[in-house]
Length: 336
Image (cartoon, rainbow, N blue to C red; front, side, top):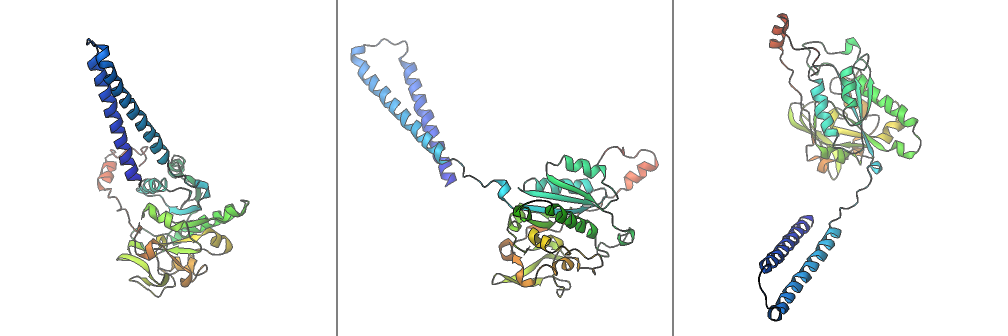
């Protein structure tokens, strides 16, 4: 409809231009020529009258089309449930690059509140300055992971769960903050756990916004598979498509679900278990909130991948290290 209206409006403008041009050419041709008024005035008057009528008609059509093409009123952004995104982050060479990519996605999502939690004893200048310039509504928190729970150099990424304390800190802040906000509206919203190295489609956020309890969807490039996903039959999740330990209570990736804020607030003890075995971190939160039968499949009954478990390759710094030995390393004052 909009495309046809746009084409019709364009046609009217072209006709308007052509009629105006013809009138101008006709007037210019008459300038400077001797005319027997008694012989020619009547045909000229008729021609100009017709041109004037056509001009008025076209102007009326233009005004009518302008009224018709007024954009539909969108609901105010404040009426949308807020999506609270909790993102753990830690110091590394690619940190700012990861946060930049993620923030550029979030800028396109209305009513989003970004809760960034640093794995640190204090807020770092890099993240503080970055968030201040991000243009997003955000909360900046920090809590360190105990040394014995941190991955050491050379450890495989699956050896210990990461971001546990940071996600729990985000949940703690949410509960305290919402408790101080008056009114039922302060309990409306969705909680999503977004790692800073994943890739997110904008459609994903609109899918999760209507979450009533816990919504779920596929995650691409995870678990050594093309994708992992809930399997839906008759609109209900009945099992999970996964290649490792499908018997887990909720064999899903952290990026594969969102939780209603009301549900989070109604279960103040629900959190991630820092002692959870490998692959059971997500289950440690969800098993206290929902049953499989209550899961809400999104993304066209879990048939579309809208988030990918991507990872940025660790940069190789051999040349940088060699230059540093010679005293020629990159300027440390330049933030990357």
